[in-house]
Image (cartoon, rainbow, N blue to C red):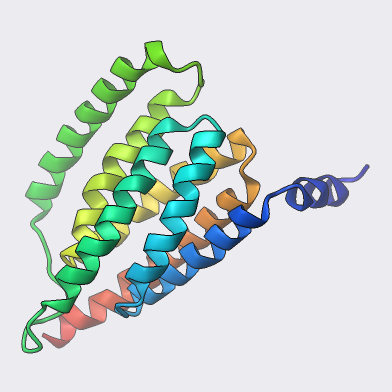
Amino acid sequence: MNLFEQIWQQFAGQSLLELMAVILALMYVWLAARKNMLCWLCAFVSSTIFAMLFWQYGLPFQSALNVYYVVMAVYGFWQWQRRNSEETFTRRLSWRLHGLVIIVLACAAWLVGTLAAPFFTEQWIMLDAAITVFSVFTTVLVAHRVWENWLYWLVINSAAVWLYAQTGLYLTAMLFVCYIGFSVYGLIHWRQDIRES
């Protein structure tokens, strides 16, 4: 069997539920990059589906993260809805603050992974924990329209591609490859808002 046939068989074995979650998640990121509030509805539904799927595949932190995303979809919608029309859409934070945040989040990820390791047999628990901890913070940045969220997502999504490919969630890995592209698009699109202000 050649490589193409092997890849096709793996993708053909993916669930319809995962496909639906992937499509809605793509719509979420595309709409968020375009600053469209409907992104939060897509996030709500796709995250609900992914929470169930990740639990079934033995990724407890990714499952918990998606439960968090469901809550953040409601919060993000509320946060974007209450924005003053005179206010610039995009905000910035200092690089010094980001440096401090990265150190704190890396320590938190290590702690979470270390504490969880005795309870789970999955070999990717530390990476799962790191992706989760950084994603929790970065989702808050999105809700508050902070431009640098797209930089965080570039790194997080790259790590997630590898994690999902290793666990057999190939459609989800492909989704995160697309997320990398959308992160670049969001960086550019939201940067224009900063320049115009």
